[in-house]
Length: 516
Ligand code: MSP
Image 1 (cartoon, rainbow, N blue to C red):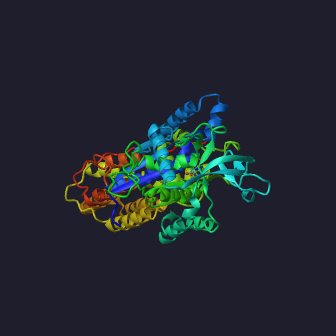
Image 2 (cartoon, protein in one colour):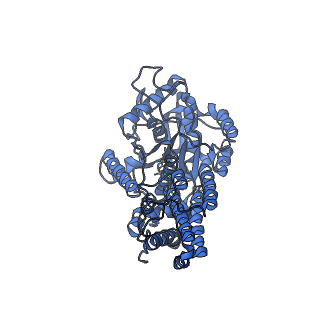
Image 3 (spheres, rainbow, N blue to C red):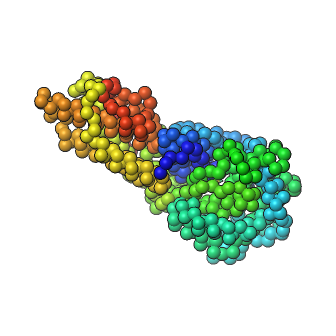
């Protein structure tokens, strides 16, 4: 597949209530790994993340803490920013839904839908879950009468709402999903959405009365109501794309088809499976209503549990990625999360698995890097001659690259990284088979030793590039140790001869942690 030249990737925007845990970190790291992969292939990338700052959850948490909602949001946005910086996430834009630009885009989108007669007023009677901020009908509720999503008690309410004519787009949406098999990934999630769409699709309530909820974006034509938080939140992807210009005269705001310099449509929305309906049903129908193109793909990944329990504040088993980072280093956290979870499936966090994955980094990649660099220093004074033959491992490299690209394109990121680790394992096998220490003792084997070491150096350069999306800092140290000024691209690493570059002995990349 030819690499794309521009790639717009998004994570969900996280609620500005709780601290980031490994679930949030996983989504963000997955996006970061893909962003790095595409940048490395020469694409211009726009990687968006941020915080979801309106709605009842935020209002209630702020009042519990006796602070203003915006104070809570300021604090939490900073906390998420810091967490992503500590985890070496290289996003291009951090959006907050309280930003004036976003507020203006949401209002422009609502005006557009209103002008197209896709919004009407009606009375809503039914059940409401404060936690999920969703309405339910009686038949949706659990047998105990609780919220089907979070199992918390629901409230009965009756109120005036503004509704979006979502039902009108049901057939178009089904057609879109059927005609674009890879649109929702993985396939079981796509089938889930198609199953959901077999029932008649209702209209979507897009407002909340201000008497009940004040912390939101006012509906442009009705100051007594604020925008439903999901409509507000989903629109962040559009705001950050730069497509909509709310201040421009009608007809020039960016809703119309035509040449467009913005990032819209997104190439990939990365989300957890918990928020699939909002992304694969509400969001595309809102976009259809506005006459805007749909995102290219949606990846719904699975769920991190702890042992076999759900991770939750009330159980007290929430795993903090920053604590793991202070104990083992950022690379251990990144590698574990990205390698351990099958992209799309579920995974269970245990300390034992975490340590096993760390050992894999240390014993395979780390070990290869230290032994090869130290042999080059010991036997060849830190540099091989310019014309040293270095192609003994090219087949293994090329096989790995083919698998790696195929898996990345197919969004099977854990398998791409598994292939990278497999190459390091093969290279260790090559060291055992060639026994460079024996070659070094035999002057007749000087050329063979050159070839052994130079081929291994070429592999180390390739490994630095292959591991860059998951452990960028350590990949850079490795690249520098084998004589690159910075981490090479895959093509550079594969294509340049290692002879003549100066090699330095690496101290262990992944030192043994103290085990508690
Ligand atoms: N604010 C909404 C999203 C709006 S997007 C327009 C929201 N926020 S959230 O803070 O609850 O974060 C949800 C996302 O965090 C999930 O979709 C998922 O990506 C990630 N995870 C939260 N808990 C998780 C696990 N236990 N396991 C894996 N990912 C999880 O929903």
